[in-house]
Length: 86
Image (tube, rainbow, N blue to C red; front, side, top):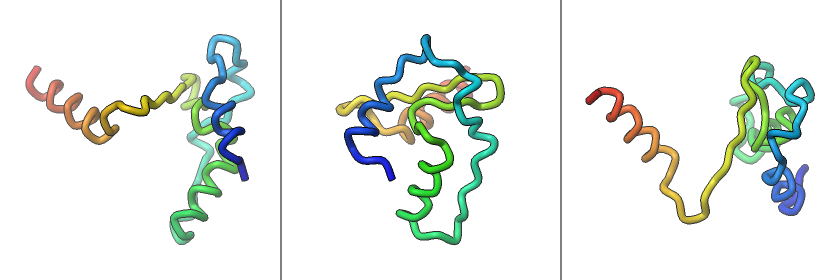
């Protein structure tokens, strides 16, 4: 299990200097939904290796969070409303 310092280090990975072939493809990750929430999180982290940097097929994905930023659900809702409204 990763500790907070290891997670902080993983969040600082420079995507420009990362070999995408060494990243886990998120399409290969399968989490057992019968597990408890904590067990699912551990299971996911064990599979994905770095929750901040992974692949989705041939696309490299880099996640970054702002401590004072808005919630993901709000951003996604606004994004899709914008698409709907043109």
